Amino acid sequence: MTLLEARGLHIAIGGKTVCENLHLKIEAGQTWGILGQNGIGKTSLLLTLAGLRPPGRGEILIQGRPLSRLHSRETARGIGVVLQDNRELFPSSVLETALIGRHPYLKRWQWEDQADLDKARAALRVMELEDMAQREVGTLSGGEHQRLQIATLLTQAPALSLLDEPINHLDLRHQIHTLETLRRLCSGPGRALVMVLHDVNLAARYCDHLLLVCGEGRVRVGHRDKVLTLDNLNALYGYPLRQMELEGRRFFLPE
Amino acid sequence: MSRSQAQTLAHPGRRYGLLIVLGAIAGASFLFALLTGSVGLDWQTVWGSGDVQQRLIIELRLSRAINAFACGGLLALAGALLQVLLRNPLADPYILGVSGGASVGALLALLLGVGGVWMTGSAFAGAMLSIFLVFALAHGGGGSWTPTRLLLTGVVIAAGWGALISFILVISPDTHLRGMLFWLMGDLSQGSASLAGVGVLAAGLVLALPIARDLNVLVRGDMRASALGVPISRLRLQIYAISALLTATAVTFAGNVGFVGLIVPHFMRLLGAHDHRILLPACVLAGGSLVIIADTLARTLLAPQQLPVGIVTALIGVPVFLYLLHRNSAR
Image 1 (cartoon, one colour):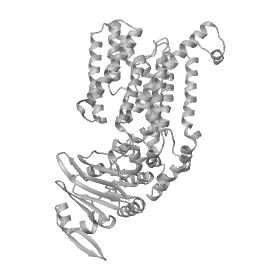
Image 2: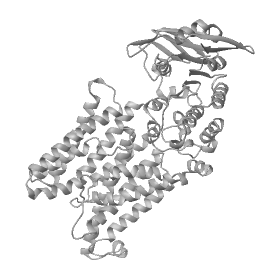
Image 3: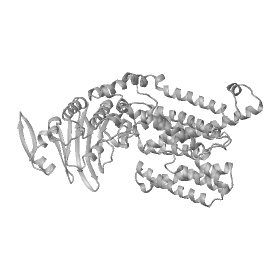
Image 4: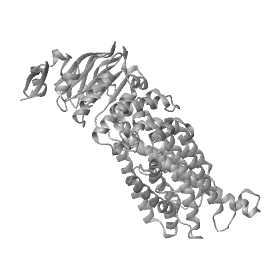
């Protein structure tokens, strides 16, 4: 099942071209990684795929239907987004914050019911935030807040999850735990996962498909084994890398 | 602890607990306003059929209390909405210049020596002019309508009105100055019961409650709200229109009653009302009660001298709020 299809996508930001005539199909069960240098347009690409930023040209289809013609609430039930660094300015508890993931599902006068609460609690439990359900979000550390954002996405439980640097601020154990959790819950039958990542090795480990944003409109798209080559990565980061093999897995290290 | 919140959310009775308490406080503050004053009344007279003079006093006090409640409710509701619209905890109803426009209108009327309906009309016209000016300028040029742009436009327009207010005060004859200063500091003494205030308050709440859950999302940022299916452009327009109308109405018949619109929403949040479906009606009840109590004190503390109610709202609000803030940060 194709969850998202981009046809002839053209994106430019601040006079710089991010991609030209990009064709992309994200199928259920896939996990995608978006890699690229700072400021190259990874976030703009993610936002465009989410329908939060209009493309210069081209079309995005969500399960076969044009994104531009979907109602925003409908879109929000199909696509969930985790953005970078979005701290809260007004008081709210951890549980209340996770519960806003249910917003697209509720009718105008409907309150969250026990089932919604159960979903939010389960998401908090998975992200190891259950003991903090009553904490004020302003008192969370950067990493805890990042995990709360992901718990909110899990509460939303969309078919397609788009995350901008989801392991920012996380310690090593939580990085692995978060990526394992995302792949287990957000990618599988009927679901797909797209993440902007900076760690090539974690991308190689958790993503089966990759999208390399190389700048000046050049983009490389495809399966991990085809795209993740030393030459491609050297060009992508403009820095020489070295490839090593350890217990059958490939690792890339900067020179 | 976590259980209790699950129950709060799941059971309507507990969900509305804060509103029930605030409703009782509002009722008590009405009673306080009716019983307090230079002529002592007891509650039996209020309910029963006292003589004509006593009934007259009750009617006067009641209409004043109704005005005070409407004024406080309008300002607190407008403040809560504007804080979300501007995503700024420091926003208050006057920040976008609505009250400045109204003040210039009212002061011009006072300068020309016209009162009553003319002054009310003039103040309202000034408020509406300011609303449209800020809206058109913040929106102009096809640019995006960001909170920052709206805030900056409003603040600059407000500064412009401030200069005009000072100018009018400087050129006004001394005999008019006292009335003008009272109006600027918030004055409920001249109003007969105005159903317009209560009506606009009710209308504002009716218009705001359907979008209250959207506000829960918008308060966490535009992009996040969009991603959760909230139509933010339309929502912002709605919030701006509702809050501007509420502020214009409050300022028109009560002048600048400071502090209520800024502090009451935070006060309610500190009491745990984070959800706008509870926060908005809570602000109406708490803001209304605060201004009734403040106005009753304003007309009795130094009787027969009357104080501008804005002074009293600040004198009550500052210590209570600071105490609450301190208590919450200590926890």
